[in-house]
Length: 187
Image 1 (cartoon, rainbow, N blue to C red):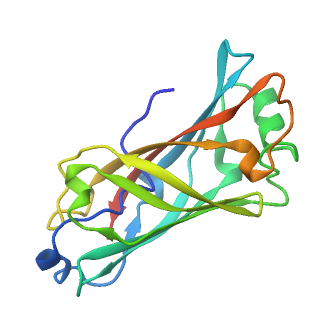
Image 2 (image 1 turned 30 degrees about the vertical axis):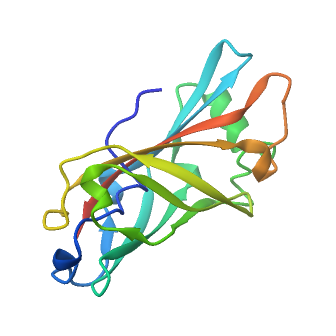
């Protein structure tokens, strides 16, 4: 799976002094952000998909230079090469898109200087009505707290699908699911 510049992890801004200059929440640019997933099938190939609609905010506390990222992924925005696999992963045994139309993420408070340096991003992921702690690694970028508008951030992580009650086809499908986030920050 190829990871491009990115989503959830775009929340880690930089510098207490510059945090005071940020007015109001920042937004995830839905038109230029996405989330990807990949899971091994029969330990030979990989099932991959891209969620094309992510909305959310990055709330910066100007007093301590930290931010909280909140994001929601529209499960129906999933794009896959195979219509058959798409129908299957949207079905009740995997994402169960009809009952759970979004995947949510709320980060822990993050220091702004972690943005350009790359760092860990901890938070809570809610999928299929189950909330679990998750960890993403933010990739280094040229983003700074004084230049966030239009900034692209990427984050990578792995979850265990059984933690989210996704237990179908365990003989054919790996439990570990790779996640890639590509977020563009907008005003």
